[in-house]
Length: 457
Length: 104
Image 1: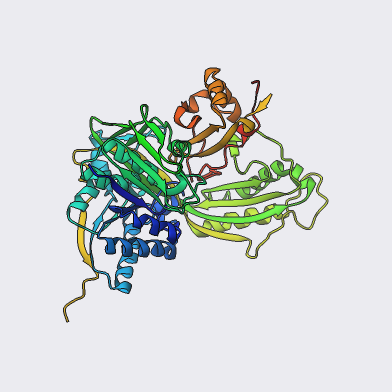
Image 2: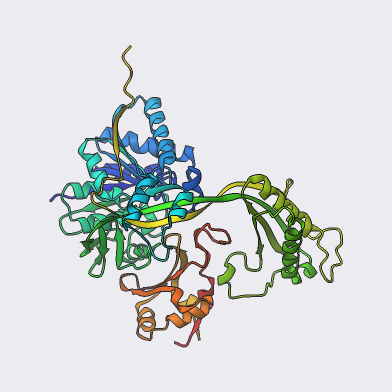
């Protein structure tokens, strides 16, 4: 089989890439441009609130370049985990940007949209049939937990993308997807080895993070053949080495030899990384084992309240010495002051300079800093109540009379006015589970539209 | 005594999904990597002490030969982004490894 090339411009849609690198990639006539737009890394908020963690203008810039180049070359652009989390609002946000690009540039193209938000009643029904299992160490899903969940997405594999490619769509925009799927779909559709296609996707998904020097905002190209694939960065200032590529395999994984995904596990125990040129690495020997039943990973979040923060610092050595006592005292005062109204709230203090970064994992128990940063955090069922708790804790801490205090005018330095900030809704992961499906496409409905076609006069 | 920081090229931490924290130690040379593997220098007891966690919270310790690396994965004490979490991406939990000393 002839080599099939996939261009990966950037690690996350919106992270950007140098135009020169991209053009060097286009000169090699890739068969597809693919990009992963998402991650659970930024935490539960974005999935719950329906916002992207990437910037609109930056996403539009990347898409504009990719779509324009793909249309002139007659190749597909494949986007996975649209809008960062791949739920309905995230997908809609991305589609709006694409339609805008089409309109502004007079582009007309066929677009496939693949949805990945899973209705909760489907999850509930499967759960009752024992088809939903936690991804250890996540806890078992309960009906109550599911009821509180505001949004669930499923990670699609290559199959819905292949279905979209078969329609001849030039732009494929998908909700939440397994990161390698956007890169592996075309090779798998064309009959290349699935293990190699997925492994190539694993490397391409973070673009030049697999190169040295690494970068999440520079282009890389993958080329797959019968029994091997190669990866090469498109910026002459970077190279892929067997070590940089192998090291990337470790990234954000639990076990680098066994990489589970939708429908099966990629096995790297026999994988060979070969330095083909100074800048290009060849990979071969990866294997893929389909699982007994096809499982889709679900991600869901629940809203647990609203947050208000106050940011301050202290430079007083007596206060620093007494900080634990002060925090405890403030907690007690807040609890005591509102005990009549039986308020339900969460109050926390992050003491930067002591143990705010590592919390319970911090081995150093004593601070050696001459100043401490303090973040007071209140979470309650509505914003007003969170404001109340934060404000009261802040004023209490400011004037708290600890043992040995000499600076009686105030314990805290506030860098800003106002001192308190409404942080809005607070979310927590509630679903991180595997669900059995009988058809890899059943949870991911597709729509086809022609974008940019003018209405008849 | 040799500090881990002096024989490793990369020492990093990151989420592996919202429930796990994973550490990668990539060695500078093969000799050192093999010595660490052969002598089992990075073991459950060490990780438990280093992070003050029970051994059952350690998910695995895997040497990865293609990258001359040892990977350690533990359960997060607090799920990413949950109340009380301190590091949503898990990218700043690696420091205790840096000053670890070994008799090599």
